[in-house]
Amino acid sequence: MTPFDAIGHSFSTVSTGGFSSHDASLGYFNNPAIEIIATFFMTVGGINFSLHFIAWRHARFSNYLRDPEWRVYMTTILIGVVLCSVMLVASETFDDTGTAIRSGMFHVVSMLTTTGFETSDIASWPSALPVMLILITFMGGCAGSSAGGMKVIRWILMWKQGTREVNRLVHPSAVFPVKLGGRAVPWRIIDAVWGFFAIYVMCFAVLMVLLIATGVDQVTAFSAIATCINNTGPGLGAVAHNFTSLSDAGKWICVLAMLLGRLEVYPLIVLITPTFWRK
Image 1 (cartoon, helix red, strand yellow):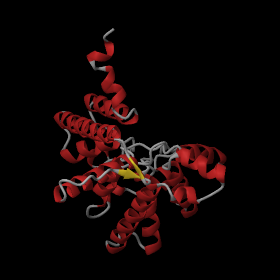
Image 2: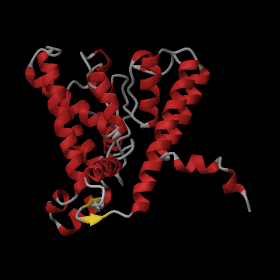
Image 3: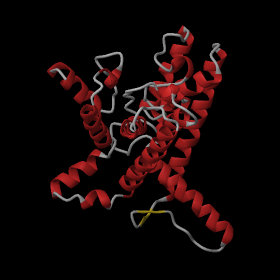
Image 4: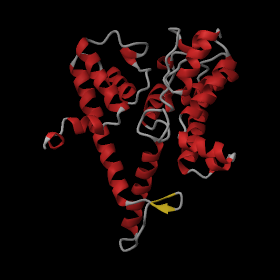
């Protein structure tokens, strides 16, 4: 890379922004070393920066290992990389196995952290891979990171609450507190997480239907709203490469989706709530 490209892409990588000085994104360089470096720092950018500070201050890697959100985040990356690489190798999308594994790892990390860098056209990948990559953007990175999405911690709490309800069906009289890191999570937080999830899904559904009403197909509308509300970038269908094919109304809908996702829904919802404006 030139110094200009290196500085620009370093900012864009660690901030999980995904912007590039070239239309082909990082694929322009066709350089395995660049992809590996970017993959590492995208992963770093998707981790809670408070956790980075604590680990740096105490000079102990064990701080990461003790954090349940970090463990789920890294496990998700590992599972995603394995699935993606196996499917790319089996479908012979690339000429050699090493390129397939490297590309699978790069794009799983890029999409999960909602960075959005690309080195190849993921919309043309076989089977369910493009949809899987779009869906993992809903998880996003860890809380306190620069990544978008719903954040890993919320998915952990929703999973624990779901398993709690299953256990309560089996043992109605038992008490099953939702615990995270060995500590019980207050019910106020659980309620807030489910409330956020409900509003997030509702906003996504409404925006997707509105985008379909502008004349685009379902695949384009689904991926466009998903990539906008999760602040990722790449989509499928007509928005696989850019959003120029959308109408003006469609672009405004996507702008709203990006604002909702970046502000995590609640601030914009509060602004249109009558109670907020009452004296």
